Amino acid sequence: MSRKDNRIKRNLISGMVYQVVLIGINFLLPMLYLKSFGSEVNGVLTTIKDIFMYLTLLEAGVGLATTQALYKPVAEKNRENVSSILSATSAYYTRTGIIYAALVMVIAVVYSFFVPTEISGGVIFTLILLNALPALFSYFIQAKYRILMEVDGRKYVITNSETALQFLSSVGKLLVLLLTDSVVLIQLVYCVLALIQLGYLYYYAKKQYSWLNLKEKPDFKAISQSKSVLVHQISAMVFQHTDVLLLSGMCGFKVVSVYNIYNLFFYQVQMFITNIVNGFSFKLGQMFQTDREQFMKVFRVYETFYIMTTFMIYTLMAVFLLPVVQIYTKGVTDINYSNVALVFLFVLMNLLSNGKLPSNHVLEYSGTFEATRSHAVIEMIINIAVSIVAILKWGICGAVVGTIAALLYRGTMMIYYANRKVLGRSIFCTYRLWLQNGAVFAGVMLILFVDSFSGVSFGTLVLNGLLHSVWIVGAYALVNFMFEREAFRTLISLYRGKKA
Image 1 (cartoon, rainbow, N blue to C red):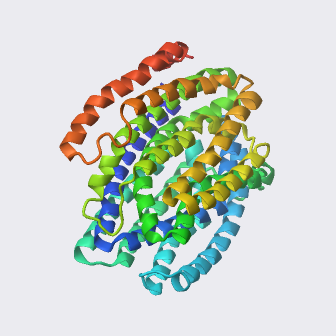
Image 2: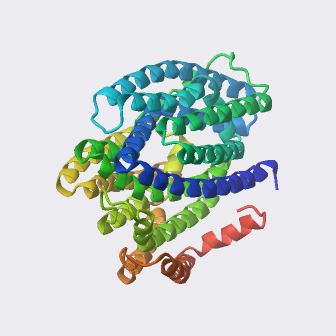
Image 3: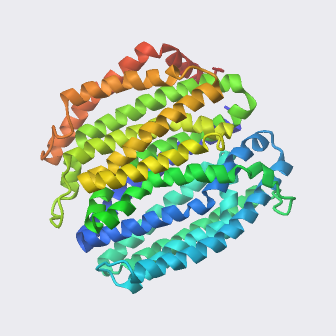
């Protein structure tokens, strides 16, 4: 195995370890917050978190544009070009950091003194500032190095440091919860440890890439598509976080808490999938630029098994999530957390969102951001418009309906453009995977719907989960083997170390 292949292994292993730690932490802490502080505080913390996710849009365009621009020079070991690109990126990040700091102050003032809540304005102001400090450090010092590390296949270094951060900060938060009831002190613990983690990554990158010269003449042309990329990233952010902001304004923070609990489970699954894919995505990006024929063969395997596995995971969530939520929120009585329709809608939303990831990667590898910018704009308009109307009619479920409507449009356009315009093949190559896996999903839903195990005990749930998982996974594997035998054969060849 080559050195880069070893990096793939390290990325995959570190990604799985990180996700196991994160799943445990993210299921434990929100439950403790919910039972210690109530749904109102949980909703406020969720809203603040989503606001800061929106602020990452300030760097989103240049971050992804830099990633795409670096694939070829990193693969060819062209250090001069890498330095020129990151010199331009560094200049952009410095300007962004100043804008970010100003926006944080505005948001802190608005949410502290003008948004009605049970939490005092001073506490909210402090929480927002503590949330902002690590991001400011990243903009001014560390972010550009992080991009290079990911493109160079050193994602495992970042992931390992984040695993340590999550574990240590969670231990600290638990100690704070045991000793005090201070939300501010909880956030302070995370802030300090996050700054230490970012400092470590900066030290590692400076040592690993000592040849990097950020005083090289900036290559602004290489990241010239950053504005078009930004449109795509804004669209992604609208998809991920607009529901929470709309619900907080139209339905209240307790409803946001319900949405957050459901989203918590789906987010962990999404991050698990994303971390696995990110473990080898850098290699696919380099291959796309240097060996298109090999890329086409490997991509077909990736797309086949990714879509199959995604359907498997979300089918199991559709069947077993509702009783898990009921057990998770037992004892919380200030609002009802059990919602059959919401479970099914969340499953559909995440199937559509995660299922289009392979096509999205093709667009990122090819750098066709400007050509598909209009698709992202239309998706945003559909998402916001339909969500507002649907929330007025159906409440919390309406927020998810709006996102599903936008995803139906964006997924269709993304699959079309990736297949016909970039890969030069029939769109049926992708739609066939959706149809055959969708048929299995529909069959399982006819046999076991989302409320089949509602109200059962934890032991009964685990037993049924083990029994039904076997035949559900087997059904997906059998159907895909019947229709995608070439992909299975190619995978075996790759596993044996042979060229596809």
